[in-house]
Image (cartoon, helix red, strand yellow):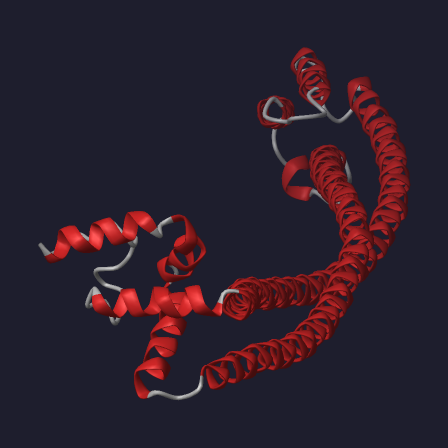
Length: 384
């Protein structure tokens, strides 16, 4: 029965209380109406409620002004902080550009120096090979010359030995019988011919010694003491000794010329190698110095890039804090403005319709909705 009566009453005054019900549907508005209801229940003058509402409105406005001021100060500080951080980032970035510019100069210079060193090394290797070939050639020439001298000396020794056989000083040879004398000369030249066959250069000496052997063999029937062949052999020996001496002199002269040329060429190669080694030492030192500088610059660049990343992160984080603060401030401002408008609307509605407002509050209290739980939409109760 109680519910039915309340429903009938609510339907009758529904249009008049629409605005008040709207206030009651808002949590803050419901709190304000609860306050009015408490004021009315204690018997305090209604004007006191108006005064409280106006003080609340002023308090909200002052609170917003303080928040506005604090927010402006905070956002100004944000602007200043971000400006400082961005300037620091710009300084770091400028420094990285400077370092990279230095690297862009050092690295090509290092490559150029390395190219020079590679070319000098290749030249050195080629020069050392040429010098080695020259020394090897000289050793071969010297060995060949020594072999020629040895063969010349052997031929000289053979001919001089035979030449001495026919001198008066060789009494043992002269005391031999005629056949034995010619046989000894023939055998001596045959043995010399066999030895000369082993020569590496003057192989013609073997044939020459055979000629002497054949002459001695053909003269065996002659009287050794009065044989014209003896004079022939002596003259041939003298002639061959002269030819051998001349040949040896020419070989010696040619050898000296080759030696002089070798000394000259080797000296030039030695100078080239000394110059190349000095140049390579300088280039190696320059490359090492460039490597150290490049490593230092790369280390600095890595450090500045890390610092730049950290500074950009710091600036981004600070910007995020400032944006979050601004967003929260805007939400708070909107909520506070809604509350202020609601207080203003309640003051206006209460002042213009004080009697209806008081009646609405009274009916609200009779419905047992001191906190607005069961009187959310007047005339449509949800519980008994």
